[in-house]
Amino acid sequence: MSEIRGADDPTTQREELNPAQQAVLDELGAKAGDRPEFDEDLRPHLRAALETAIEPHLDALPPNEDVYLSKHRLGQVHGCEAKYLAEEAEDFEWRVPIARGSVVHKAVELAVHWRRDFEPPSLVDEALARLEAEDRGLGYWLQGVSEAERAELRSLAVDSFTKFVECWPRLQPAWRPVTESRLRAELCDGRVILDGKVDLSLGTARGLQAGKVIVDFKTGTSLPLHREDLRFYALIDALRIGVPPRMLASYYLDRAHFVPEAVTIETLRTTIARVADGVGRLVELRHGGRTPNRIPGPPCRWCPAYDDCDVGQAHRAEFDDD
Image (cartoon, rainbow, N blue to C red):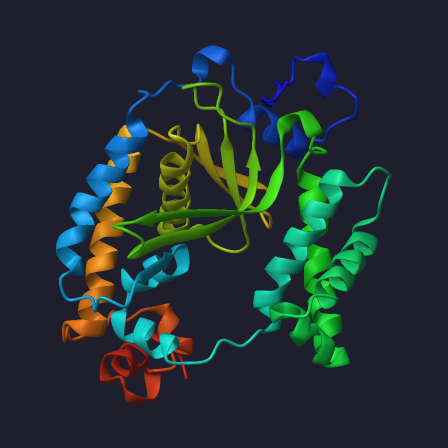
């Protein structure tokens, strides 16, 4: 059975669940009548609506260029545009806080398919070994990282993965769990590319009936941007298969807390408008001579443009202690 079963189903009683794990099961489960159905022509309608909204913004885009849009880039360009441009100009560097997410996601992926009992540190070590063996990106960084940074990374990854194991029931194969799943949509003859990678998806659509749940794992504070990131995933998935996910959820490991949202047509329409506006901002900043806005806030602390930004410096002078 491809759907997540509720607490009253006998197949979920194979292990004793603590209250946090039971809460996850209760949150994710749904009866057949609670799963919405969507029109069979939703897929072409979404594509047409999105391309119609995007195309006017592509007039200034050179013929040999495209617009690549990830959730991170979309979130940046809807924030402080000066910070976005400064970060785009820098070369990407792996760091311990960034690498932690990749290690934890690999450990979750292994845990889904691990046939024996395990301890979280052992699976984190296996995840590190497998990532280090890759001759690209994070693998290269791990091969040359200092022992102190590796120890710090392992400590943080063990902490996050242990919280996942403590708070989530064992993911059953019948739930169709998929980790680190890449989503992609190409629009306007390939001139606009939407790209994402889902932390965890569970379930699947049945015909026109939504059944999938997409989950992003987070640490720290709940932010409105986290919900927008998930809506972006929902739109890409609906463009792919014609049926959007049933539910989106940010799960905060530090607090064992769900922030769920049902996916509706209005959700998708709102996201289409946000994506189209983001494409317009990107094209104008690159090719239209747009003056970037400057929006001060906590990110000013680590913004690479801070030294030359009067707005950011004034903000920190007003709100930060020495």
